[in-house]
Length: 373
Length: 236
Image 1 (tube, each protein chain N blue to C red):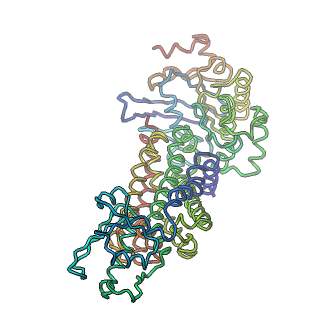
Image 2 (image 1 turned 30 degrees about the vertical axis):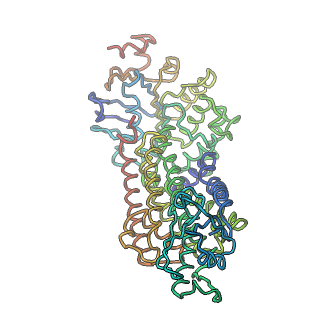
Image 3 (image 1 turned 180 degrees about the horizontal axis):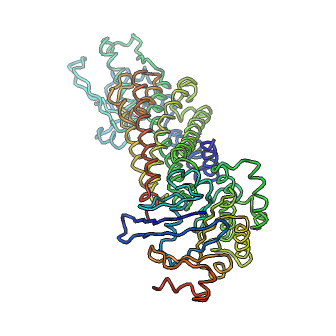
């Protein structure tokens, strides 16, 4: 009963704070989709790649005709310094070759790995040339040339966008919203000098900690629901922000529920960590500064898995907090679920949450920490 | 009756003892004024009596029950007004602050309803009881904090500088409340720097200086010896 009283009070207190509403609800629900819209509406759309420029050494007609057959809207550029043109973004790829009579000896495609446009153009042209040369179709004008991929272009782009963005956004918002709430509920009690009155009440320290952690977890959960709802709604009306397909269409209810459940585990852990940090800190400002490394770590660990294979997990990841949840989120985007990895990750996160809860309870009992000036 | 016996307290960061052998008692229906300069040890003693800090040595008991034998009993019987600028939740209303404290201390709905109305009248809270604390003056905050302390109907009441920030009318209300609580048989310990308040409400004056009790006399005995000069035992 007293646990519910604490949860209710903390939620009322937090909801009335404009900063919490902006940072935890408005920002993920509105500002993130808006940012995605602004960053994608000029670059996305079908047929964009490879439209912005292909340079072919000596303007070779054989290769040029091959590309035109597959991608009619391709722009061919003639440049005296082709590699520099790619670096400057004037062209996407350069196709260089050696030839003996009518036969090609070797082909080299130059592209800029730091640019998604160049990467996409490279992938398309590479697949096209590889398919054509393997079938000796380059010199044939009669055989239809086509390249096949296992996913549609929209699907591929959506998967790439979501697998890059979603784990990072989810982890950063889960960490920042739940920990800022927890810090306000703990260091804020010290700053407002309400902690003495709270501690003089007939209520156990563990109930106080658990009530506050559950309340801050609720804030974190609301933030994540806002983020996902914002993305679902905005990508429904403007699918380009998620790569071409709407979030709900691509992931479906099942995967979105799995994502929500998985991130909830992290939210509870972040709240517990934020509570322990906030109780140690003298003020909200100090607590916020102390939580920054955790937020940065969440961002770094979740984005650090971009190159990892979502279908072949390194089991060590499952025992590293944050990293394990990030991997599970990314796997869920790829419609993959590994029960063993999930269970180990769940137990690891619960273990660390438990450690943080104990640390919080001990800190609340420690006079030198609670009344340090 | 509350009895303090040889209470010692030190803090790791300070060389001197914060409290050094504090012993005195307060009877039922008696109000004791705790007097002393800043840093004398008043707040430390109040925190110990509120079970927020633990003494290094010594004990205190209420109704002959030692604090460490049944801390829940002591907490249920004690109501503390802590000093400070606010000690209230700014984003909650005055009533939400009072109700939260009442609920955490197990005050039922019926008891709450019975107690809140007289407190609202006594402290003139009705004009702002449903307003958020963030909009309050210091006096309004102090009145709300006093109401919160008394909502549990505690038998042992600790008031740390209760009239700080209050205007003359509200200050008089506090004096009236303390005297009425005495008549109701409550045991009261209050700290104050306000001479009028001390001599209007206290039955005894206990002067604490550098963690030790320098004087523990009835108001009459004190007045007979030193008039209303409260600095006599602080200077020594």
